[in-house]
Image 1 (cartoon, rainbow, N blue to C red):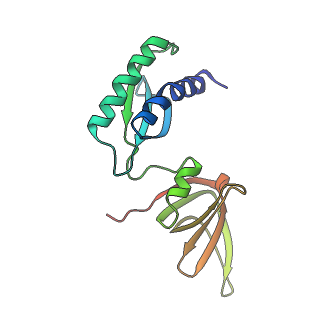
Image 2: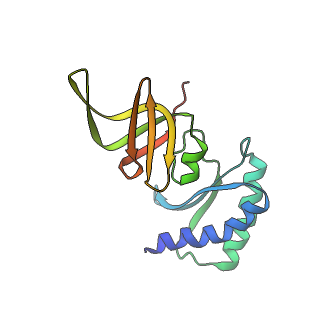
Amino acid sequence: MGKHQIYEEKTEELITPIVEKYNYELVDIEFVKEAGSWHLRAYIDKEGGITIDDLTTVNHELSALLDENDFIEESYILEVSSPGLLRPFKKPKDYIRNIGEDVEVKLFSPVTWEEQGKKYSDKEFIGVLDAYNEETGTIILKMDEQELELSVKDIALIRKSIDF
């Protein structure tokens, strides 16, 4: 495990009691380099949406804990943020929460199927997330009359599909 993954795990340990205290959900933690600067990002959410005040509260409390523990060698910018409407699904609870919702799915490799004697191949789909099976690591995507079973490990990106 690389040191950046360790940073993310230790940050998750520090932030978890904070988000639980306020009944928020920790969506993700990432430590990434962008435009020459390191960014430690914590994405949080709650039922009905997260507010600026919620983000500020968690930022202040997490910042104090990070200063106390001081385990990150690089200088970095701390950001506590909302994951946004179009966030990718990463955890089982993301799949479960979005059953019955319109989603867009992009696969690493195309799947091929036959319909009325014609062969089709595609790796991008929009449909309704009909089911998620954590044991088998699969989803069922419904598109009109067609159902497609996909392995989560074959999915490059899955997120809500929103028409603007």
